[in-house]
Every structure is written in structure tokens, then in C-alpha cells.
Image 1 (cartoon, helix red, strand yellow):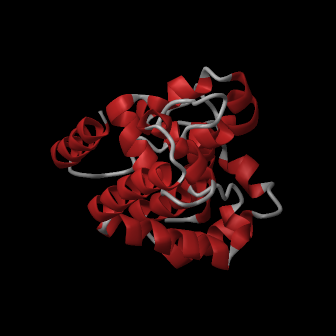
Image 2 (spheres, one colour; image 1 turned 45 degrees about the horizontal axis):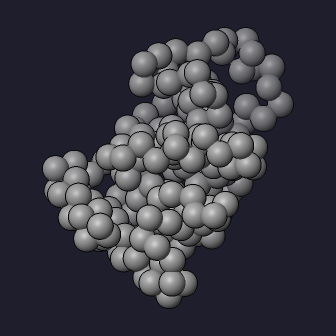
Length: 202
């Protein structure tokens, strides 16, 4: 691992998370970015330092993914914040099923406390944002949970049909879509949990 390789991973993942058209899985991380361009960067020493600190391909990919997932597009400059995001990402990976179940419970509690119809968890209710969107934006449920739900029920495209949401929260919803493939979980197990949750709402 050297600074140039870290730089190319950064370019590929930044493009993946910020562009609707680029998919790092489909493009296998192929991006334009020559060694000459890297050498001309004033901040190349940061990538070199990061490469020495992290040391291998898998971990540096996880470092960038964690930071883009949590909305930090300046991971290479962020220091402690970037390290904290990686630690949180790794912690959540270890307990993804529990987080998912707890977040579903939070959604149900929210609609019960606010005396809202259960349909408002994922759907717009009299121009009110869906509860799942509101709790995500308020950091009350995790982005990982919404990634899983979106894989199972395609809620993000539905939300983007709303012009206000598309105008204000398009970047946040793009992050949810782009994190698909990076959030690893037992698909059959969580599908059953989510199906049961939806059936209980009806």
C-alpha cells in the first residue's frame, strides 16, 4: 500500500458515493487518476501517511466507505472524526442484526407515541415526511437499517418521487443507495424479520 494507491481508492469511492451514474462494483474501481496528477497534489503526503497508517487494501477501503457512509466527504483531512467513523462502522458491522431490530422497534414506538398511522412509517402522510426518513435524518436510526430496508422494499425511489425530498435530501438518499453492497448481513434472516414487522403493521 502506498499513497498513490490510497489516492485511487479515495477517488473511486468518492465518485461512487457522490455520483448517481458511477458504481464502484460495476466499474471495479477504475478511475482516471495518474501518478503524475497525484504527485502534483499539495496534499499527497496525507495519502502517504494514511497508507502507512492503515497498511492494506481492505482496511483502507473500509476507512473511506465508513466516512462516506456517515456523510464525511473529507475523511483524509478529518483526523479523529474519520477514525471515529471507522470505529463506529466496524462496531455496527458486528451487531447489524440487533441494530436492525432495535431500529424497527424505534420506528414503531415513534408512530405509537405520536399517534400516527403505521403507514406513515414508510409513506408520506398529509405532506409529513415518512417516520423512517425523519428518524434517519435525526440520527435516531442508522443508515445501515435503511440500506437493508431499501434492498427489501425499495423505499428510497418512492421517497425521491417527492419534489421537496428530492431537492433537500437527495444527497442523503443517494448515500443510502450507494451503501448497498457494503452493508453485509444475513439476508434471509433479516428478510424474515422485516416481513414479520410489515405483517404486524397491517
